[in-house]
Image (cartoon, rainbow, N blue to C red; front, top):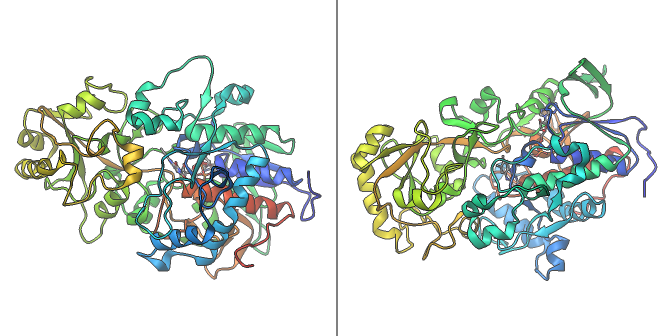
Amino acid sequence: MAAAVSQADGQVIVVGAGLSGLATAIGAARNGRRALVLEADELVGGAAAYSGGQVWIGANHVAAAAGIDDDLERVESYVRGIAAKEPELLDEAAMRRWLSTAPAAARYWEEAGAIGWMVIPGLTDYHSEADGALGVGRYLTNRPIDGRELGEWQGRLRRSPHFPVGVAYDRIAEVGRRAAMLEQTHDESDPLTFGTGVVAWFLRAALAEELVEIRPAHRVVELLRDDDGAVVGAAAEGPDGPVVEHGPVVLATSSFDWNQPLVEDLLGIDAENYGSVAPRSLRGDGIELARAAGADIARIPGTRVPMLPGWPADNEPGFTYGPEYALPGCLIVDAAGRRFCDDSYYISLIERALDPEDRHLPCFMVWDERHHRSYGLTTTPPGGEYPPELVSEAPGLVELGAKLGIDGAELERTVARFNQYAEKGEDPDFGRGSVPFVRTYAGDPAHQPNALLGALAEPPFFGMRLHIVGTGIGSSGVRIDGDGHALDAAGEPVEGLYAVGAAAALTSSGSGYNSGFSLGRGLTLAYLVSHELAGAPVADLAAA
Ligand SMILES: Cc1cc2nc3c(=O)[nH]c(=O)nc-3n(C[C@H](O)[C@H](O)[C@H](O)COP(=O)(O)OP(=O)(O)OC[C@H]3O[C@@H](n4cnc5c(N)ncnc54)[C@H](O)[C@@H]3O)c2cc1C
């Protein structure tokens, strides 16, 4: 049922046609307000379409229907617990608004036909030891959708180069992610899974709404303000020249992955050591636009940002990552030839690699022939020939060290110690293989006793320099309250300006992260902001 428009008859301008932007447009339109989505790129979907499509929603109705026991109290203590290392970064009120609204948002999007949910089988919360963690049930994703249902937009949807789109999630639990990637087939049907599938559902729903218009190839370059400083419109560069549109503005522009000055300022990583697996159209525009309109930027340190060890690849965006670094027969060292973290778990790697007191950049992935024969790397099949410009090879570890610029003698000692325990499935130094999420999601289920741990015993040895790659989650971003209002430095809303998704700083989870927070919070903010803008604000259950 379309509600009457009470707040305004004019349009809402949504900047960015990723997941949060599409959802905001659908929510506004379903409540009777016209939504114009301006998208910088020719393709829609943003980083969401490249993603794993894991949407983290505590105490959701899909898990409940499957008999999984969860409640908001446990959900809240989990998020507060994992944010405890730097509690000052956590906005408690925003956290409660997010967590208490997310289950209703998940239900709303399903009832709107914007998604058909399923629980991802076997996937546990990252920090399974934390108070309130759940074994399975909080990660939702889409049931497969046929891309042909998008009609002429089928070819305008981004497709993930990082996941075996078309393969169902349960296949990962069965054979492991790397093997599932190698199984990907292409025929004339177009089943879409992972983030590509999640976005396809929302895109199909947006296309079905008469009040939604999506304009690709329109990059917003300026926000218009009235004499009181309120945001009243946006100017974009379109294929036929400049375009000016009027209305309140929702920034759904995602993160700043491809804006190196912002990467250096907010994450503290130089260009040599950085890259991103998110689309190149993520240029931090939301931050720049909001700042120019008087909004504050909230900072979360790089050590707390979910980034990954990655490497260059022949794709858009030019980098990839994969479970290869987490598979048995592999480890990660710094230039001194030493390990420094649980190198199968990126949260541990980022925290230690970027530690301002004890940095470990550059860092390198080193593996052996058995890993080569079993797994391959990116598009190199198991046993195939690696791109020589990417991967160095040597008969021994000392020689490999010399090729990579690592202390080879120390590397040899590091590998000898690692090997002492690896085949027993143990890593007394850094606990590699001890995080259940990583075992399920990245490990080799056929490798026992530990899906993430195996000795580097068989020459030749291989190695490559790693880059820290962004994932369209910079964590820092536009400061918002729990309802998506952009705030100024005094904490007051900038009238007419909203931010949803990764454009907005992740202050609702502060220094803690779990996969799926980004998409889950993005869909929750889209629900809140779209309803408010259409004059149908969502009651605050957290305040009740
Ligand atoms: C490989 C990978 C795996 C991931 N896995 C997960 C996961 O499983 N779960 C999870 O929660 N998160 C995951 N993420 C992160 C997640 O995808 C992003 O944080 C999320 O997509 C951000 O959503 P969004 O709606 O804010 O923006 P996006 O989906 O990134 O969309 C933003 C859009 O805004 C457009 N835009 C930018 N600037 C402008 C401008 N000036 N004018 C107009 N348009 C503009 C962009 O082109 C883009 O289309 C993953 C990311 C990657 C890359």
